[in-house]
Image (cartoon, rainbow, N blue to C red; front, side, top):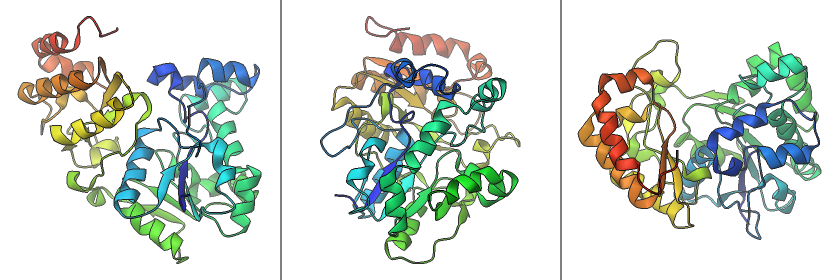
Length: 339
């Protein structure tokens, strides 16, 4: 059994019926209807093997899992319903991730504010961390490290402004470290310290200059939810108000992307998503698309997936080279591609 367990709440550990953005349904207020209704609509249970390892898991968590495995750690992602098999017991470190721990981001905050109820994702996150097995393991010395896009919600400054968050953390023993930023490299350092029972800093913010280079970013070892595969990080626009643009633009080479496409295709995933801040700019150092980079990427994706989607693209980007969009359509749209 792994000594480092990685998990998230039930609303994230789902493929949302194969429709990535249906996951936003888990930001609705809980529980106006019976829980089973929400689960059936928005977050069906992810299949697992006998160890509780999910068939697919959130891509960002897969990256952290891969980084630890490549670093020689015994680490695996475990479905939250199976945590009691690992703690108290073999697991010494628990890594948690989430998109919106306490429903403070839109649209959770919007829906929750109107209805004056906690959203589904918040309720499930709290349920995950307050499971008797987790609470007992915490008492016996389990280290908990939190990360993910909403890590700031657990940061000390946030807990001062919102004392009810601190009260919740105190109810089960709290977290040891909160990590913000791209931690593909740093996660090995912090987990190593936790396993050696060394001092853990309560809050770590990884600056843009500490962002890993492409060769430092591990390839996922196991399938990601809805076949999502990252093609690059950062953004070349340079908008001062956006945290993404503060990080350097890094495009993955096609061979690195293909490795992850194969990981998903191997288990029968035939519908997937190419992910970056703007897929149209793949391979470009500026805000002009590069046809000679983008078209080969799409052809590669279609060799492994029957249906290929883009996570993000701006209308402004498309208008820089509208004819290129038609060429993209010629590659993507066939008898297997679904609108």
